[in-house]
Length: 198
Image (cartoon, rainbow, N blue to C red; front, side, top):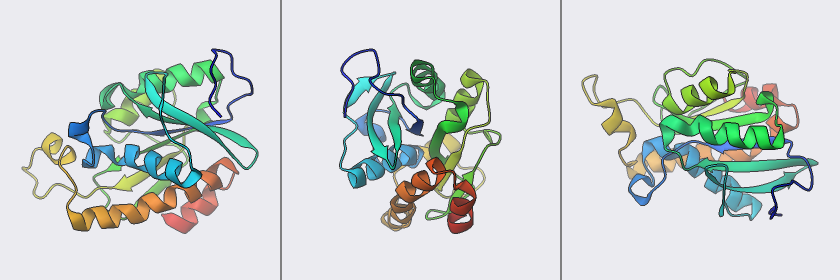
């Protein structure tokens, strides 16, 4: 169901934000793993992120008895917090109910790390969200994208590079788990999600 007015017809219980950069030139790049997670989840839920609001492409669905907003910020990675803040304040969603999905170079493709809260770890999207919401208390799902090929390799060039076929196959395994992880988290079972997937 898509809201057509500025007044929500029912409260939004959770927000799931996938981080990435808008534009075709960034499609299927390592830094866009969060966008890819949202697309995978929405496909499984038979919904499509096609609504422009909150500086994002978004849509919503009901999972169990919870209404969940899915967000792909169009602000570019470094300003992701602007989109999250706009949606959070509109729906009065607690920070603890904002689930953020993003890439992690410290994990190999196919590996996942779920955390209930924590520092941004140098990730610019997570840093922007932490700064603008004033909180580190939001659950996050980190998707492994692999480390730089060698220490001198430019980090920006690496995260904006395309996945190899092998790495994409490994990442897809993680993406396919994201809906189950999100469902566990919104049902208060984050420890179960961590035990199952970390």
